[in-house]
Length: 406
Image (cartoon, rainbow, N blue to C red; front, side, top):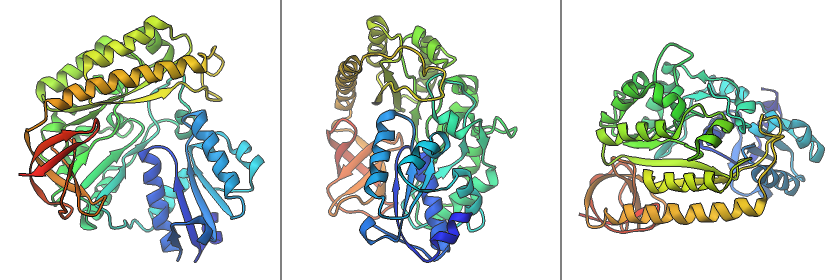
C-alpha cells in the first residue's frame, strides 16, 4: 500500500462515517498503521495526518464528509470508504487527498492480522451483495458479493476473544448471503463460530429479506445456539408492494410477514429491527400508509428511518423525487408511530427478570449488558466485561432498558 510509505511513524487522527462495516475497515487500518509505527491521536490538532473513512449512502452524509474534509484541509488527508469509489473526482476538487481503496486495507491487514483489545469486536464476513436495488449507491462502491473465507473469519474471532471481546458483531451488506459465492452458508459459519472457546455473544448483522426467505430453514437454526443472540435485523424499506417493486427489492410485504412469523414462532422473544425509506420516488399517501401499517402490525423493536436521497449512478437517479418537506413530514410521522410501538412492547418487559452479559463500560459507575435477545440494559453499578448475571427491568428508554442486578 503506497499510502503507508507516507504514514510511517506518524501521529494519525482517524474518523469514520457510515455503517458497522466501515467501522470494521477502520479498525483494520488502525492495526496496519500501528504496525507501521504510527500512533492514533484523539484530536486532529495533534495529528501529522488525517484518515477519514467515508460513506456515500445519502446526500446528507456526503455533504457532511465534504465539509469535514474542508475543515481539515490544513493536514495531509487520506480517504477511504464508499465515497472514494463513487465520487473520487469530486473529492479531488476540494482537496488533494491520498486515496486508499477499501480492498487494499483488507489485503494489507492480512499481513499482520492483529486485533486491539476491546470488549466488542466487529468482524466483517463479506463485502458487496447479490441484490440490484434501484436506489443503492453502496452496491456501486462494494460490488458483487465477496464472502470472506471461513478460516479468516474464525481466526479473527479467536484473536478478538483472546483480546477480551465478549460481544462479536458480524457485519456485511447482507449477512444472510454469506457463502453463496463459495459454496457454503451462514448456518455453517455460525456453527463454527459458536465452537470457538470462550464466553461471548454473537450478534448477526443486517439480513436482506430476499436472501433470507430463500435460506430461512437453515438460518432459523442459528438462533438455537447458546452463543448466538436472538436478534433479527431485517431491512424491509417499505410496506407497499408497489414501492418495493420500484426499489427492485425482490420480495412482497406478505413474504416479509411470513419470514417474521417463522422466526417469532420459533423464538417468541426475538428482537426485530428494521430499516425504512420514506419519500421514495412515486410514493403516494397510500404507499406511505402501508409502511405505517407494517410498523403497527409487525411490531419492530426499532425502526431506522431514512429519507430517500438521489444517488448518482443508481437506476432511481432520474426518477422524479419527492418534495423534501413531504419526506420530513413522513419521517416525523413514522418516527412517532415507531416510538409508540416500541414503548408498548417495552412496557411488557417491566419487572421481568432477565439473564445478561456485560459487554461495555460506557460510563463510570454503570455497566451495559445484553440479554440473550440482544436487548440493551443499563445497570447502575460497575461490573467487568463478560460478567453474567440476572437483572430485574425497572424502566425503558425506547431503545434500552434500565435494570437492577437481581
